[in-house]
Length: 138
Image (cartoon, rainbow, N blue to C red):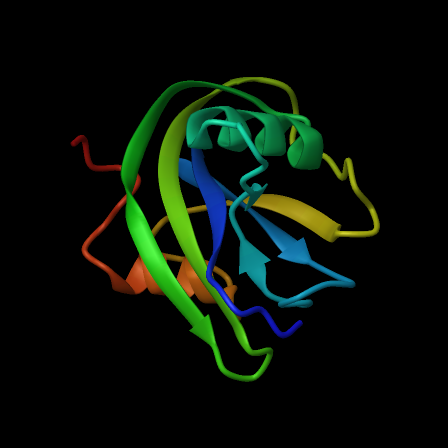
């Protein structure tokens, strides 16, 4: 992908029983890495609506109490991409995390924030390395 401008993505750190939901990506940018549910912002869609939609589409999970946390500036020189990723946290509302898009994700699992899997997807790694934390209230 050779973009001439940054794209906008949204990631949602879903919290349930003190753990956060992450999925292992496959067949796409960042295959084999772990990331929050999320995706690209569509034309005329609010970032909040994007995050809620992507979480349900990707993991079959409904969320509530969605809160904006911050953003990451994700430059990938290997793939020549540039994404601005808007990060949200949300409380789990309903649904069991499951593979909804088997061509994009191989598994979903819940992790303690201090025991995340490796390797992390670029935007997730940047988020973890920032001062943001999905368990902190804004």
